[in-house]
Image (cartoon, rainbow, N blue to C red; front, side, top):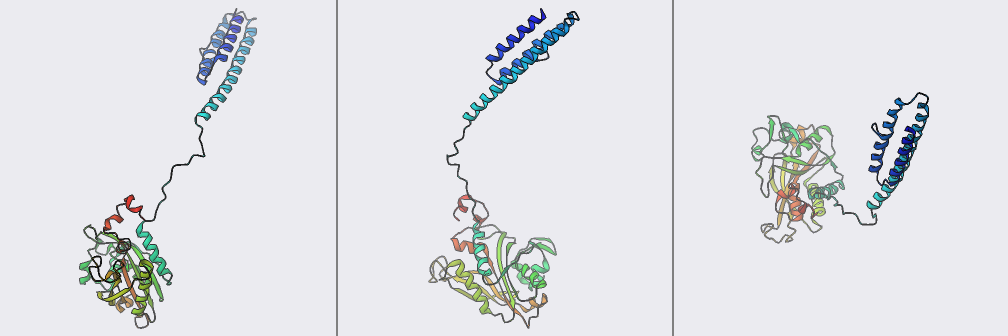
Length: 340
């Protein structure tokens, strides 16, 4: 009787598995026939009622049925798996010939564009690029540049102090001092970088901006060398027709000192609203390095002389691209940056 039941279960399992269409159907049938409470397991629990001599025969028959169902489940599962994979591949098929979504390519910031041009101009004249710390000692930012604590020039530079001796640098001239201390002449360097001054934010002022300062120390350096270097830079930046002019000014670390101007590239020097009718536009300050600064850095001011200059990078970029608001450089507006 039990043997007939096992045969009936075998036939039912074979019929149900032939009709199965999905992986879920196969799993449900596995549980129905082979699970802990499945049909075959239930029949095997009745073997205890059989006479001892019949148990081996029924046990062998039960194992054959179990093996048959397991083999059929495995075969059917593999068949359905292949079919489902084919359907999924057809459904998820990609046309690799279709164009992809365009990827926006990054652009250089206008400050970097102009800075690269300026650096190229001075590197072509034998300058090297030097950098220094933004958190600086007072002695490098002021004292060694001939600006002691009681000097009136400090009134024009509102400084961010951490302690009386440590501050955020107000100028990259501090880099020049560090180079003069550790390197014997000849020296020919350019020191660009961020500087910080307490200032109200408006269209032309920012508490954070960039300076480009240059320094040359050697025997026989004169103002004519300064003017020649500035002319080379100006032509690189504003075109071959631009002219440069230097006129007297005052800075504590240079003597004599000069104001650097370029001819107005809108009116060609004739005078317009852009240059306020003067025909010239100021771009920075310069002069011959004060002998006190040389001596303070251990350089013989009798044997050596030199020139130094400083320019605001943002001002140069605003002039170059006719930008009228410095805040646009720091707002990360993609519409503005895409113009460069």
